[in-house]
Length: 425
Image (cartoon, rainbow, N blue to C red; front, side):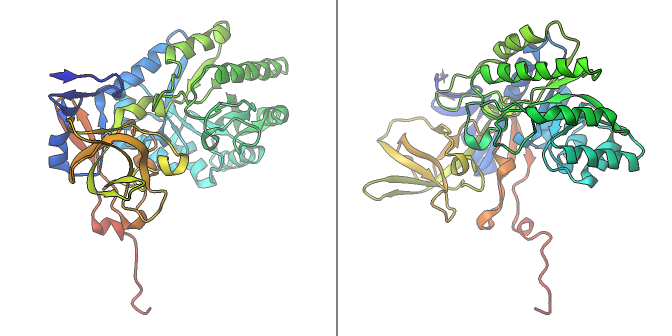
């Protein structure tokens, strides 16, 4: 018997009280692979990409996966073969994208602090565009391009001072944020770019944040961007691209974000008569609900005022709750009757902020019993660390009835790789 709870994220279902991801029973996977582990659904990843890309089919566009959300090579390869490009923010992400087979003419380099060696590497690779965040960066790119005897294609990122109505730590388009050039100061930078000898000015970029749950911030941003585009056109500076970034939200708890089609329809009304290509950089939307973190109960603790379920996953594995007080649903791998408690689900790390979920109504799980932290495919493993000298966990890709380990669990030797103890200390 299959039970598709209305609260379960896509690709998850209880079958005869056993939680499955696609066709794989997670208790079987846990028995063979251990915990903690990140597990992803191949079908959901591809479904999310196709939903997003198809939504914009009426608009000349290119989807660029924001790699900062999840940079595993297998996932990059999967999305690249489906047609996605990559939005990168470091030379390391460029290396990963190319290793996964994403063509360099589908790669855009974003970020506020690019080093000259990173700029040179990206130029020599032949990436599609640089998203430029300041006048000084623009001048540096011109200098590096001159020394490399190349032309650098750029977009200039503006800060539209639009509130994305999201968490303060993940909003990027307000005047107090570090990102982009304030619109009021942008025209001189565009004029400079149009004159620099090694700069090929291609367009404008504005990314306003992450986990956005309304179309209004996007349309407000596009309105301001199009006013700038029109002003530049009158000065003889035509633009070919508008990059609106990513940030479309997903459901973690009770959010009701717009669908990609709803967003596309709003943007189409403003772009349909323009000869311009739209770039989009979804990250969380593509991978967030395709992944779970599997963990198991080490100990139960009742301190009177509070219950704790101490599990073997921790803030070094999933940092979002500690960083943002982020909410993730939790589900037992086995669904059965039992006493319900209100519990904090916490990890072994020696920090009071080490928790995965707080004040949750959940069955009192047995020691050794497995559970999942849902909607953990974005900003999960990529934000992990070896804090407390904990081994980083494996990543596993489920495809139908099968699964493949796409990153091995670290070993103790991995913890000290690259360290040296001088003999004469």
